Image (cartoon, rainbow, N blue to C red; front, side):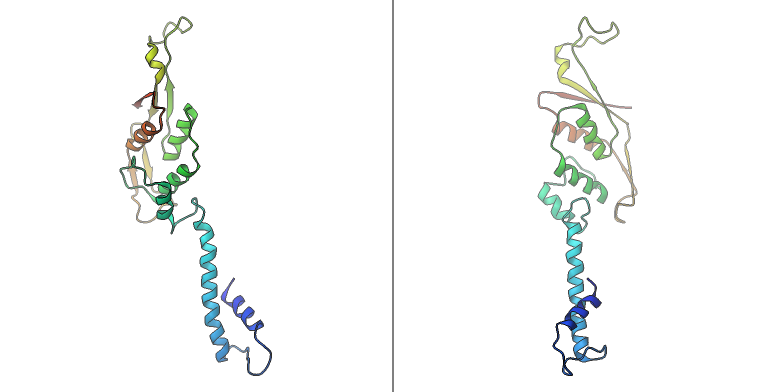
Length: 191
């Protein structure tokens, strides 16, 4: 509600009579206007709290949300932009995990990386003659294929304190190695 709406409500609560003037120049009206301004300010802050309660739209409480979610991630050694921090927060709160290639591709996409995954299997008689001769141990290996340099550029969601661009694949390797199944080995191939 606006200050004018609060003033109107406060004046409607006053008793009738000459001792309770409602004209704009009356001292009582000026006092009620001061109360109305504060009530409107508190009302506005309460409305803003709704946005802060949603991690996708938070700004003032981003640091508190990160603390609750255990962020920043130890895998992220570089300074993240505000949009990257919010994306990491939402990912941390909504991810249920997985072991499929689709899961890891989607995970990398939330970090800003476009990857593909190559899975290996032991060579058998059913394989094409050109298929590499992998032993049984290769069924526990998989390969992440990513660009050599992934560039993160400033977007409209970032703040003025964020860098214009940043790059690197360290975060991708760290996150995937941390979340991979324990019995597997991940190879990273950059092109």
